[in-house]
Image 1: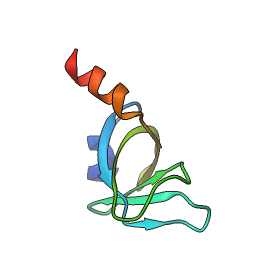
Image 2: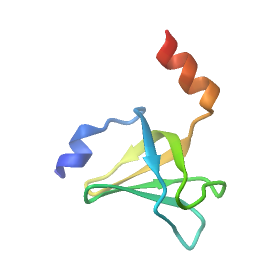
Image 3: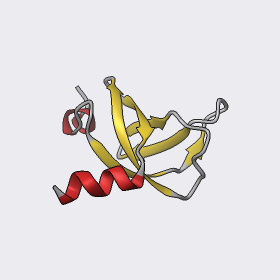
Length: 77
């Protein structure tokens, strides 16, 4: 298994920077050689987002955008 994929678990909250967009509009982020696809057309290249990992594969993962107010409440408690 890829080292980066072992660092994450489904349900983890991660802050990422979008480096590209897929043809279908997903945001693409890289952490080393590991790729995270953000399932949202609302992402912009160059912006940072908090995402929740939804599915992990050997070399990539899928994630969804997380509402910023939800992230704050999770970290405050």
